[in-house]
Length: 248
Image (cartoon, rainbow, N blue to C red; front, side, top):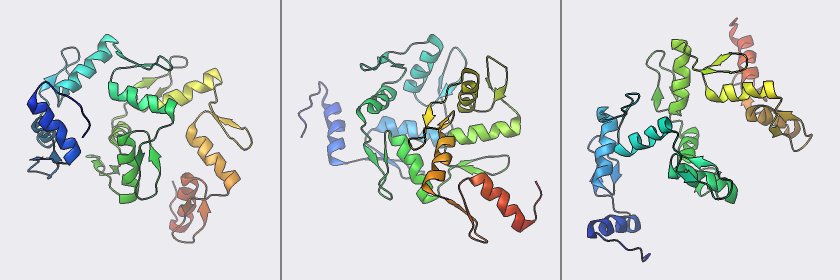
């Protein structure tokens, strides 16, 4: 099939399942199937909550041995995987592979609903939830649901008051690292997101996306009461209060 060679027969047998699509190891909780028994064992820990691999530096616990090995590189500052184009270094090989697609322009993951393409498998999984409406991450305080685990973590900081990301210039603190990065651009004057129509530049990609709607006329946020449409979700939220009588 592909002429790849192996020194152990068991490895060849597992490899051939990639070609045949065979997944003989099935989870008895959610029915997800795997090509390797070890992958099934690791997966079942997601259901049980078991995290047997513990970091001896910070005591953080992990589902798999490979996860704790990668995590410990953060403590050592080790980044063994280097990009041969720009020399950027990564703790994980899959992060390097994803990064190299930025240079090549390759986007191998395609949505079968809208044909949008993505650099990584995780990106397309998150995107598909927009079509399916699936929001698998659930806040145990207010029951709000999210499409991404990272969004849930950021949200829970609103309840806890935690703001772990601190500006080293003015000491302002933030719940999300991305918000800190955007804020720091105000200090250095960096505006990396530039409109290709009028050349106006922005500190945040989201601000550029919203701005470009002024050129395109796109108004994706529509009131379900009177059908008035808006370029920003916040404007729609404010408008809907006129119908409800709500005063924030």
